[in-house]
Length: 391
Image (cartoon, rainbow, N blue to C red; front, side, top):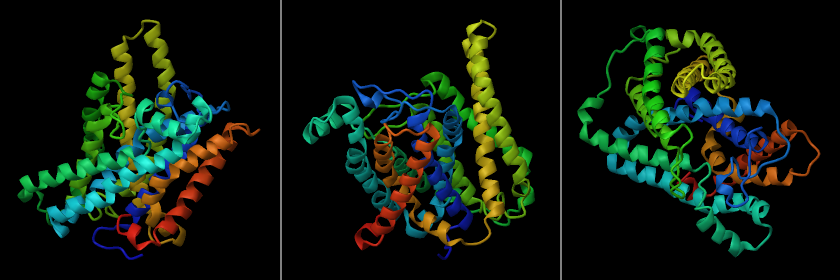
């Protein structure tokens, strides 16, 4: 696999690693201690399939992912947008995004989700037939979107930025001769923290940290819309200042200190995990007001998101130095794995409901099955010339 102007090896590998985290994240949700299932409308459940086996370790793992990985995925998605627009032209760029994002979203949001959610319907209503299931899927459940929500939101961000680029074309001239020493790690971390705080905390207070739109397949977490778009724009800025030679250059201070960022990432998330129940107790006993409790929690949350994003980017930049055959294949098929993994997740979790296994054992089987199943089908799909032009 040759690198092109729009490809950077460590970014490809980081993107595929995040895809693996997505598969693992969804594989864990049936077995968290907070999981619940609503038979009246499974769309209100914490996950479409919920097992009686639970393990708090999967709560910690799931929440760690939730804090940062979608923000980082949007940031990575923005890195090469400007170069792509400049190379293809705005019109061709928009057409390309329509084919590579919106059409796969429509397929993933309908056919794949119909396949994926049938076990949820059986758990809620029994085996009442496919027509009854399809009617329930679109009317009662209001067209559950599942993981493809990321794709339609990314499509909107790309189109919005294409218009921004047209209106401000002269502002996107790449700065020449920018050197790594111009970017001090402490300043970068502080700016990233303040940006994340501004994009998340006001909206989390205003809308609630878990608020979703509920607009059928065009569903997303409204309290994080500004955060995700802000990180996407941050990605476009990084791409415009040649991040791979400047901020994330191999000898840049931020990259050289990658072990420090990994330690900080782990310590801050540990603090977040410990602080959550402690702050809840302080609020209930009147030591802190609800606003104060949430403000402290959101501040630590933002710090965890910031350090996690920096840590994974710096570590992959420092450690990824050459191609590996298996990881090349994973990287090449990551997008399709993201689209295809959910039916494997839900059907495996459903099949394991009565299995005499621990929560971790079921999680591990689900994760391996979903990752391997999505990977194999992705390889088969990409052999089709028709599908390959879209995927």
